[in-house]
Image (cartoon, rainbow, N blue to C red; front, side, top):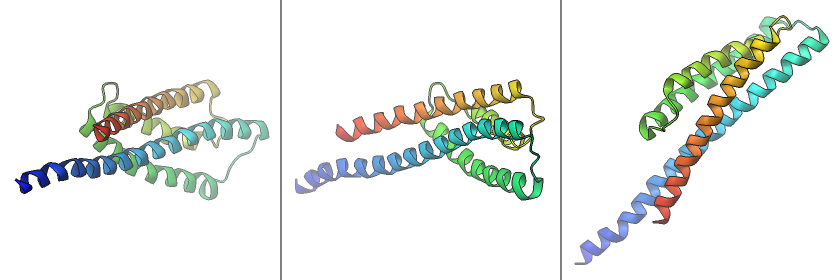
Length: 153
């Protein structure tokens, strides 16, 4: 009888442990997504500054290191996002949307350094990516709320 009681007593703790790990993973993915969203806004600002100053950056000292950093960041983020999407199956988010956002992001991170980049198409590309990222953040937060409810119950 004590054994059954101990099992029942341990079961909620086991679920709390799993949920807090998932919560930490959700939080990390959410933070990384917000960083990408922030850099998207920075690209828009950088592009406008380059147009105003009529400056041309040095590719190897400014553009390439910045693009390489974000490319490596996105590889890790895509793996985490893919895993999260496959596990949670959010209603309005698919990995194809993540891939399209990554492709657009990689392009406009580089384009943001050049004044010759067309403003309208550039801004629309950023807007599209930001919408996808905000939708993904919303899906992560909804899943976090579900985990909180499971932990309480």
